[in-house]
Length: 112
Image (cartoon, rainbow, N blue to C red; front, side, top):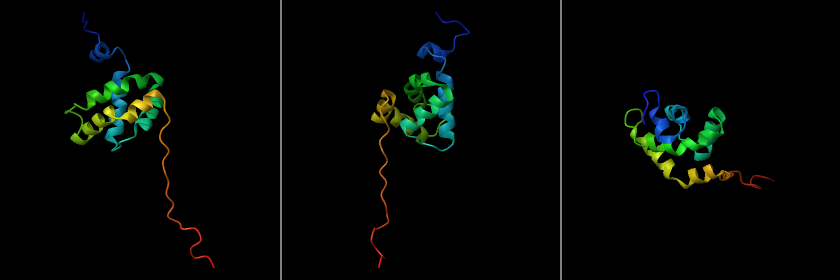
């Protein structure tokens, strides 16, 4: 049964972290960022604790359909990240992929 003091997101998701996670993601997006799944998860865990990871999937699902606060590009990003294998891997605890760095310096050129 629904009580007046019960938060709607708590009823749906069983957690009091849904709103703080949502607000943290909105702050990231408002700053023009589109972080990787690993970066987003890391920032959320640093700010809100380890349990924040449990809400990220639900938050991204809600934000992907949020026409009030987000632009179409931001909604698309949330939906894409939600469906990505990267998010699944990050939530499983897999390491982020290594970034390949290409050097533009040719060794041996210009040496006498």
